[in-house]
Every structure is written in structure tokens, then in C-alpha cells.
Image (cartoon, rainbow, N blue to C red; front, side):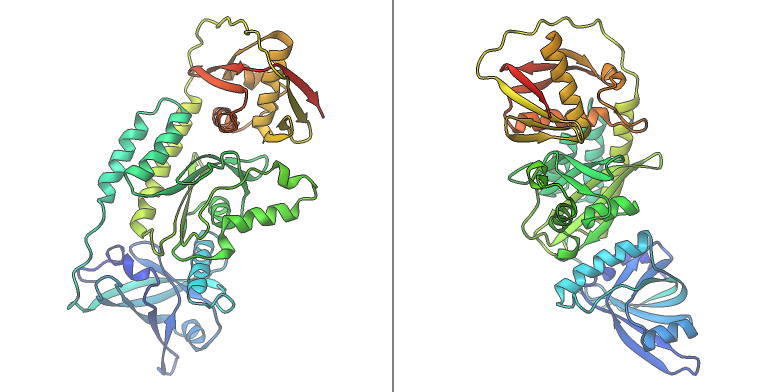
Length: 444
């Protein structure tokens, strides 16, 4: 392969300039065709999109050897790759990643009704030859991604709790990696969905909004456990479509009243969703987007995959390292005055309303309802994560309860709604409930 390897020419596989695939039948009759998509896999393998059963396809099945010509869109350099066909994948991580990227390419070229991925053809690359070295110099990078990643890593290492970790992740993406729009979503295994705990760059944070597994670029990345990167706008994988499908599927007449509006760009032209995984478990998804085509490269994907690995480790440590129990805090609830706040709780999904405004549901709703019950009945304002885990009213899942993350979500939701109820952290694993108006609790 001389001095060229696949990982050094990944820009050629972004789909900006179509690749040309040359094949031959058993008699040696050649055939050339343009190819919609080439996917980099590793230093020895690529995957090609299988969309039609045509002459190219029949040649590949009869004769597994082929030639692929690709062009670097930034420099004009051309490379000829010798390929050997290995297999076709019709499901799984590779297939779903290519399917999503193809949807963006199809939308960009006006071929949404024509391009449909039937399979991902995996090839071994046996030779790479640079056929044209008389090229333009590559553009100067906007930033050193590796140096930026190191700085992000140092900042995340200094975080002392989940709230700080989530905020610092958003700040690193914006200030260090130059990514202006991002969301962090965590996995709720019981509800088979992801819920937003932090975001950056949007008019509304969308904290508490949900998206089901398998829907949109975020849901597909979570379900398959693989990064999904789309370089052109496509309605097929947008989160707005996913939310609409979820709403249409429910039979509850009040569904729209209990859904928190999702953040997001009106026209997202580049999207990258990276699963956050640790100990073979899905913890969440980091999602970034841009109004610019081709905003996120293979290098950006590598950087965010690495960042999500550290994020997963930090989340695991912050939620599982034992917390020393301090002396119990004795607090007397101050007298509250004003118009009573009616708090309604719906037991079927732990949905909580403040007066007629929806606030939260699910585990976070159950936590809030338990806190408010103890406040009204006993004047209690000091709580610990440990006692909540033992509280049968909350009904935490046995595995991966994510209680700390739920408390972060609840605290942020209360703050955003400017509610007369707040949660304030008093130490690691401890917090207080602050109530500014009399409460009228109603179990619906």
C-alpha cells in the first residue's frame, strides 16, 4: 500500500465527490459505475452501499475483486483502491450508520425517493495507489482537535458532581471544540427512551424532553450503540419527526400537554449522535448539530467518541463511589405564605402538575411527589440520595437507577419554570427542599 493508508484519506469518503467502482464479470468484461457512499471502517476495510441489483452487483457476486477510485474534495488528490469483497450486512451498527448517512446524501441530491440502502458490502482493501499527486495544499485546520480533546479531558476530571459534569461537557463542546449546538440525553431503560438533562445553543433548553429508542438519529445511535453522523439535512432522521411519531402513537388525549418541547435547529444540516456507554450498558447519547453542511468530520467523530468514553467513566464514578454520611442536618421548615400552590400527581405515570402547568413525569415526578408529601406531612426539608433509594414510593429500577441524574433534571426543571419549589444541593448525596408558597397536594 506504499505510504498511504485508509485512515489518512478518510476525507475521500465523505460523499462530496462520488467514487467510481470498477468491476468485471467472469469473462473479464469491465463495468464502471458511480457509487453513492463509501464508509471507512478501519485501516484495512471499507463498506460500499448496496442499493440496486444491477450489473455492478452481479459482477461483485461472481468476481469478488474490484477497483475503487476516490477523490479528496479538499486537495483534488485521487486514489485507486484494490478491493476484495467479503460479505454483505443488512442490519446492525454498520448498516444503520450507512443508512442514516445515505438518507442525508439522498436528500441533498434530490434522490430521497430513489436511494434506499439494501445492504452494506464489506471489502478488504489490498492496495492503495495515489494516481494524482499534483494537488492543492490541504486547508489549514480550524483547531487542533487532539489538543482540544486533552483540554476537555482535564476539565471533566475536575468535576465533583453530575450537574457540574453535564455543564462542563456543554461548555467544552462550545468553547474548546467550537460546537455551538449540543444536547446531552440519558437513557431510561424502563421507559425505553432518552431524556434531556443538558443542552447548549438553543432558545429553550428542553431539559426533561424525551425521545424513544430507535427514533431519529439520536434514537438509532442509542439503539445500535454506534455513532451516527449525517452531513446533509434529512427529514427522515430528524428528532422533530421522531417526536411527532411518538405523539401520533399515543392514545392519551393529553399527550401534547405532558410533553416538554424539544430543543433543536429549524434546519439541521449536519448531525452527529454518539452513544455514551460504560460497562456494556447504554448510559445516554451526546448529540451535536449544525446549520452547515459537512460540519462534522471523521476527526470530530473520533473526538466525541473519546469524550463520551470519559464521560461514561466519570458518570459511573460520581454515581457509585460511596459517600460518607455526615451528621444528619436538622432543619425546621420556615413558615410560608401566599396563595396555595395546587400540586396534582397522576399515579399511572407519576406526572406532576403545578396548578395547570405540566412540570415533570416518570422517576423524577415520583421523587418530587415523595419530597412534597414529606414536607407537607412532617415539615421535612433535608434529604439524602440514600434515603430516596430506600423509599418505596419512588419505585426506582433495580439496575442503573440514575437517581443523581434524575435529581439534576428535576432541579433544573424547577429552576427553568421559576417554580416556588426548589432543590438545593447541600453536599455530595444531600440536598434540601425550599418551598416558598403553601402547598395543596392532590392525588389524581
